[in-house]
Image (cartoon, rainbow, N blue to C red):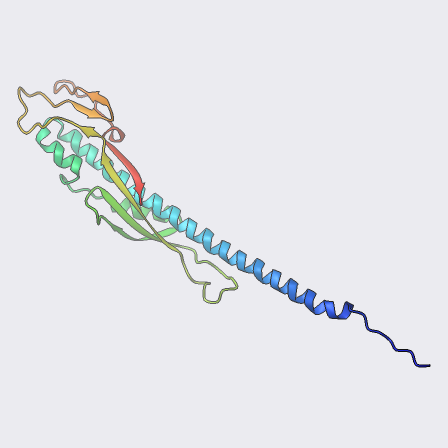
Length: 198
């Protein structure tokens, strides 16, 4: 009598198990690569936002200083509030802030006029090693735009009468400016709003 030995199914399951584990490992590495890229991109975007805001804030401060210097000449106010008065030098702040945030500013422009700054940065660190070939040396880039908006309105003062200064209203707060007592003047943040834009 001959005995026939049956093989179990356990041997057939092992290759399937290995395939499933390998697939899960590949997915985990893929998610890690995506996470690396997203973190690098987020860092670049943060640097771009900070750089654009820094340039706009520097320009705001320069415009506010120009207004203080010409506060007794209301005929110059309109150009200052429109950004078309004295030239401002503010992009250097964008380059400084990008460097502080581990990035390099590759451009600082004002494509929409003197009251806006658009900054493009490149992350200092590459994405790094991952399962995606060729990404080791790739660096994320991002751009951001910040705008300056005047907060104040005032009557036209092309020819001010009796050396009086126009009444300045900034976000509902009225400033009655006395030419003889200019110790209390609006601050830069009272005169201009600065924020990121799409």
